[in-house]
Image (cartoon, rainbow, N blue to C red; front, side, top):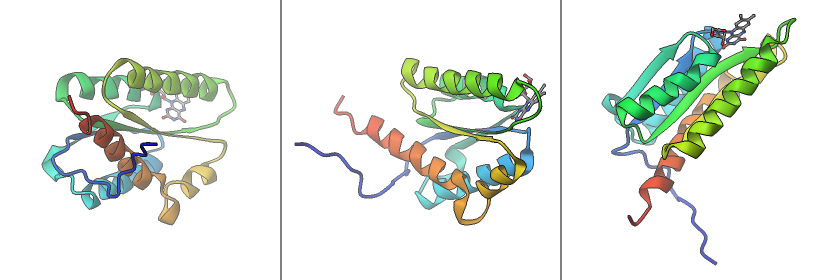
Length: 155
Ligand code: RBF
């Protein structure tokens, strides 16, 4: 058996893209900040991080694609926050975004981390974007780990 497990999340020399939706920005900016902290902790240099803002979660797919195609990033974290309202908007956007980001993972050779919270209440979003439970940090680490898999190829 060959087991591959990276002992250390090492982002040195990596270029990482972060796409951030402005809808529910109190939440998405907190997620972004935790993500950026994870990148810094892993040794990614500030001048090799590109943060692209987009209006809402629906737009993070295009934002991620843009970074992949035009900025030669090693990985992307796509951050948004959907909070369920009274209509079907939530379902349609969540479905489109999750499929769009999944498609980028399959069709491009750049890993894209799914950083879109899909919450039933504002409190759920706050709980997942603050303190020890701020998911943004793990998303940053995940992006580096996935880029490390790519970089570990022999050719
Ligand atoms: N974008 C989000 O990121 N989170 C939301 O909770 C959210 N709710 C929306 C609700 C409605 C009724 C509409 C019209 C848009 C919403 N959007 C939301 C914005 C959406 O992601 C996108 O930016 C716009 O639909 C423009 O394409």
